[in-house]
Amino acid sequence: MTGDVTSGMTAGKRARAGDVATYALLALLTAFFLAPFVWLLSLSLRTSTEVFLGASRLIPDVPTLGNFERILSDPAFLTYLWNGLKLSVMGGGLAVALAIPAAYAFSRLRWRGMDALLIAILAVQMISPLVILVPLYRWLSALDLLNTHLTVIAVYGALGMPLAVWLLKVAFDAIPVEIEEAAFVDGASRWIVLTRLTLPLARPGIASAFILAMVMNWSQFLVPFILLERDGDWPVSVAIFNFAGSISASTTQLLAAACLVALIPAVTVFVLLQRMIVSALIAGAVKG
Amino acid sequence: MRSSKPASVQIRRRDRALPWLAPALLMLAVFYAVPVLDVFRLAFSDATLVRAPTAYSLETFSDVLTNAVLPEILLTTLIFTGLSVVVLQLVGLMIALLLVRGERRGLHGMAAFRTLVLAAWVVPGIANGLIWQMLFDEAPYGTLNSLLGFVGVGPVAWLSDPVMAMVSAIIANVWQGTAFSMVVFYAARRAINPTLYEVASVDGANAWEAFWAITVPQLRLAIAANTILVSVQTLNTFDSILALTGGGPGRATEVLALFTFNTVFYNLDLAGGSVLALILFALGLAFATLIFGWLRREAA
Image (cartoon, rainbow over all chains, first blue to last red; front, side):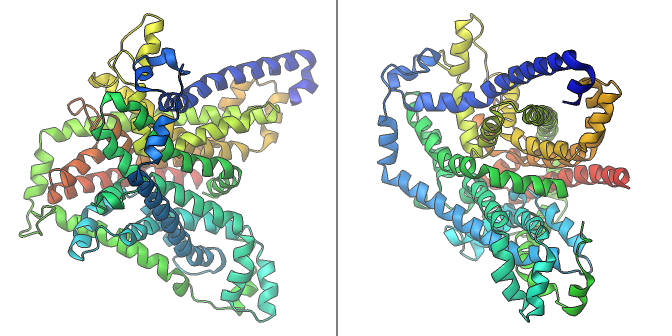
């Protein structure tokens, strides 16, 4: 931009050439990132005959919604969707509920060992759920806590909490302390200030943390796969894995439809709210 | 960063932090600290998934470490993680810089493109593996092979050739994981003071020179931090590989996380799986410590 001023036409031309190059690269990248979605949609709209015709039927001659009809009229599949929704929402809610008081303490109180604990909370995110589930499975089995959604929700709460603490701390940091001070002068307790004043102001941050946790839970495979043994308890991520193992090539279009249904809720929520979530993530990334 | 806090609030209200932290600490203890300690215990035992430990020894440790399969698994893990981390960050950085440039020039479609990359990020790992399995389908009607057929190339053994299976697994991982690096680099790039670029431009530096003289040095810390995060994430990734190749052909794409999963939950070898889980844990920790140490030296 400044180049335009200093060296006139050539810089302007160079910038426009740069725009063309930018678009060319973006077009290539778009093809890569879009292709799997397009192909999945294409397969899910085909009849089995057209599945065998490969890429020549990218746009099916006889498109059908029959695959979706079959998937969505299966009561078992609806149960998987419901289970997935229930576990994701409640697990995300738990993660945020646990994170709020901790993040508030990190943001507003000054105490010894604070920085060390904040780093520890970030560091535990690096531990693979697999490492945790190996011993956890045995205990939960001994305590007869397998095969219950509450256990999965508790584990989701623990897995989602660290990121939520971080995002909420950043959100609280952005709220001026002076606003709270005024309330303290009026004699309000910290709890009142938090619930009446700070939390409403931190709504975008809280929503972002909740949605991120929820979307991650929706994607979780390992935790429900290990902790839930009964078919009727499974969320959709486990169900499509099992479904994929049981189908033949002639039902690829059904699997495609099932995959699409499984990813649509997460992608839709994320796309609709991405502006808010991305700015929360960017705020977190800058501070980190 | 925390300097905006007036001391008066601290002094007047001597709140104790512990009650605020109790729920989070309890969760950390129950779901992180204790399981990790228990993994250590189990690693020295003879426990299986269906039988409690009966004796403690170093036997499991030496069995796992001398298992002829382990070097192969570790090499696979190294290749998968190493290449993924490099490609993820290069693509993520390229996209971030393109987005920043596009936004500065007022080009259209930047938000839509960012949304597309983020959409791939939230696809469940299992679905990611299944989608790419359809794309890589080696039958004549498989997506990529039927496309290649149009131009008279192929068919490519995307999933049945050991080398191609690894390439395919990395492609699927890059498709899904790039968004994370994109967000980190996008944030870091926008935090660079624009004056630096203006000065460089006045000095006659072209875009390429400015990239190496300003962007790369300024992003150094972001790159280091992102390398830790992406490496550990990739090291722990296995659901997409499980759905895509199942670790095959043979063990060609069986990374350490998948091998651990199979050992515990298919072979029911809890003790052996605990040793592997410890290796997984130690690798992530060692790597994080290494780069974190470098980061602190740089920041100091």
